[in-house]
Picture 1 (tube, rainbow, N blue to C red):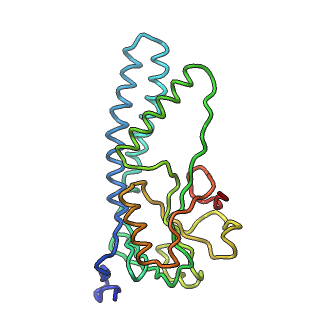
Picture 2: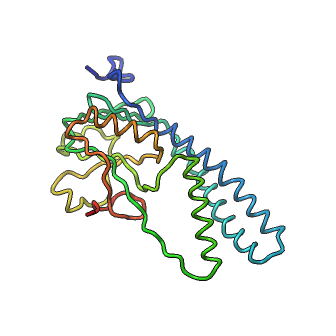
Picture 3: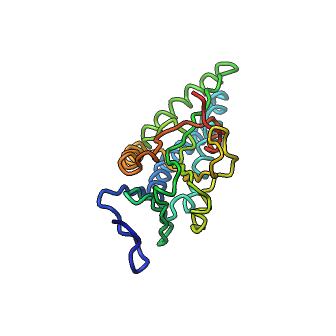
Length: 241
């Protein structure tokens, strides 16, 4: 039997519970991203200053702005991404922690739970050889970064929880931040608005999370399902394929 500790601290979890520390995973992803994009941005800037070839300067400038902007974005979002928070999946349901506060969504309170994701559309390559070179280099860099970060092409990945009834979970105000902003899709039917908890794209995390959902969730656990592309926000309707 699991539950909240008598002193109001961390809950007593089942021995085989799966814990996903989102703050720690976010920190790892940001540090690796900064270490990758920072030197690449500096190298591109150096090429702009020192290389006499105008074409090289143009290409290096483009990628210098790209990597530099990504590096600044990583640094600026460090605290927001790494703040202490996470989820635990066990026999009782899905636990959420924010700092020292814990909340529980029981399996019996959820109509379904699963991992929603999107896939970006393939962008056509137009223009001359410079555009083709940009596309080839971008694809190569994307593959290298994804390999280091152990991430997938899936976008907008989120743990999605559709409550059985809205009123069942009205007493958990800390989870209101995860309420989906978009309207429910026609495929979802007249169900309550889902919650979506954004997740980092680590293969190792998802394998264990899916295994825990299958082990504990029973018919409530839906597994992976794809949503239509909405720019990575994960708020679109389900795909029909």
